[in-house]
Amino acid sequence: MSETAAAINAREEFIATKGRRKNTVKCDADSIAGCVSQRACVYCGARVVLNPVTDAIHLVHGPVGCASYTWDIRGSLSSGSELYRNSFSTDLREQDIIFGGEKKLARTIDELVAKYQPKLVFVYSTCIVGVIGDDLKAICKAAASRHNIEVIPVESSGFIGNKSAGYRAACEALLTLIDPVDRPEAAASKTLNYMGDFNLAGEAWIIKNYLAQLGVKVNTVFTGDSTSTALKTAAKVSLNIVQCAGSMNYLAGKLQELYGIPYMQVSFLGVEDTSNSLRNIADAMGGGEIRARAEVLIRRETDRVMPVINKYREKLEGKKAAVYVGGGFKAISLIKQFREIGIEVVMVGTQTGQREDYETIHELVTDGTVILDDANPAELERFMTSQGAHLLVGGVKERPLAYKLGLAFIDHNHDRKHPLSGYDGAINFAKEVYSTVCSPVWRYTVPKGGG
Ligand code: SF4
Image (cartoon, rainbow, N blue to C red; front, side, top):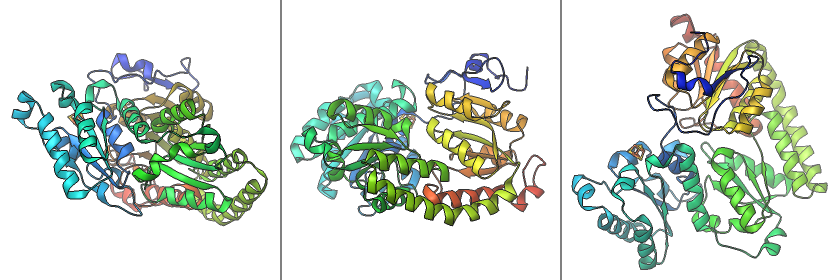
């Protein structure tokens, strides 16, 4: 078997090496049975998108394990309500599986509404609910009219697909929430929605601050630090900007189709992407004064952060990184951001990347880079080793893979407490890469580590 061959034959199509004959990877497909995919389940995909809606009740209709698995998932920050940080479950037991869980669900919604008086309840479907066939829609509709609030079913049973299906289920739930508007009036509003930022460590606040300096108002963020009232007004904007394409392109496309709201892809990861995104937003919002203010901000921030980043670059030049993240657009931004600090990406993969994402990745990386979709732990470990990576950037499930190999690790997802977006985020990123790659700890572990 060659160094970059798949361990399971059926996985061959999902792996490519830049510069070899095969230069495309299969993607956007269900995981292969027998492979331990790094992807989360459908319900989890829906939960990560919706959980940052701060004033909502997030009720998981299923066994208690589904709710505890995703409790306070990602730790998104709130400037107001903390209700979303609870994890409510109907705690389905054997009796409920045999006789149905609908009455229990209705009772649970009543109890939660009486206790917390929410304006919005999301009810998530889990694997077992799809199996026993509880009518979520009917129960939610009846509860909504009983309490005169929004009770929205999230169709996220495990077997309807992969994590991407969960993103879509979350988008469908959000669409139900958004109030329709008169389009000509909305187009004149000169405000935008910032989509695909979950405010894990305050990133949405950083970007809102930049846009305020440009004179551009953010109507709501999807869904970091958002409220049900603000989300309802989402159709009143003149533009949607999308950071996380994997989770939000579907909703942005629907808002364009229904209300004619255009959307554009942005990225606030790294100095180059942040500056380009601010310019693109300024132009889309009318250019002129807004663009002039964007240039002032870009110049001031670039002058401030580049000397710091260059200091880290001197220490990191020549190191190699492996990237395994959720969406394609994040992977693309990371390849560029690593280049800003002198690091070459030698392995790159995603859980839910699309064909266009992989085409861009293929263009960006150098010959010999391994590109793979929907990887499993065995593949990640093998390619990190064979490619000579000094660090892995990924999420909570990838952390132990790197540490067991004695490699540095950057959390770009669930567990981090410092923002990686915008100019300050670019400094945080360089600093974190430096402290993990150049940590003295690697001298005391297996000899594969960096440093
Ligand atoms: S929804 Fe299904 S796959 Fe997801 S946590 Fe619950 S039981 Fe597991």
